[in-house]
Length: 303
Image (cartoon, rainbow, N blue to C red):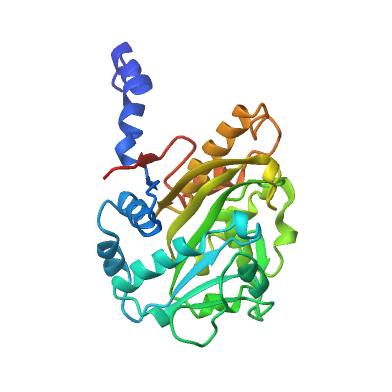
């Protein structure tokens, strides 16, 4: 047996981790604060993809792909993805070769979409926009510890985009990207104990999410750092950014950092100190459904 020298030991303790944790290997979070809505979305995606958005979408989508864009409109017009950003994304998809009539912008209900400023379109020209409206698939699907019926929209789409907002959640800690997918199932109220862990991560292992998800994009025009998930103007900070990632959880880790930053700035305890740490993200790391982690992502702003 070969003898381990002191030099070998020091190398394994201090040097090897540096090679294992190279920042360039971390998932990219593309940031943009352009004033023009289209440029803001376009440049965020460009920074996240490392190439023009059209190139990425042409590589990953086909002309007959059916793309679902899942919004988070619980917070009404003041805390939902802005219509102009969603329509900019639709335009980019269309320019990438996706048929506009094959794009479905959706959330849990027509009512929530309308409150956020969207116009319902179930069968007219252009992109479709409507809610699940209680129409769930009849079969109970299992995803590890989660058992639920999924929105019937999940069977209509071949690819899934998560379009969320930057906000605190009174039970989960945050509701940025991954937790937005609770809006796909009929019984999310059943899975809120223990800071929604491991349930949010487990849900994301289902093929309707795991095999269809291609992008997370977050409207960070404002950050609600406390009092969520409903809109509470008392805890709003203007951030005026939009960020995105192809990684399932990188936007969540970035959003978690932003929320804790504003909590400290406003003399509040960070989420972990308040026992609202989003533990489901740690579960996602364990399950290897993300390559990101707290501090383990790279911010790309000016590619």
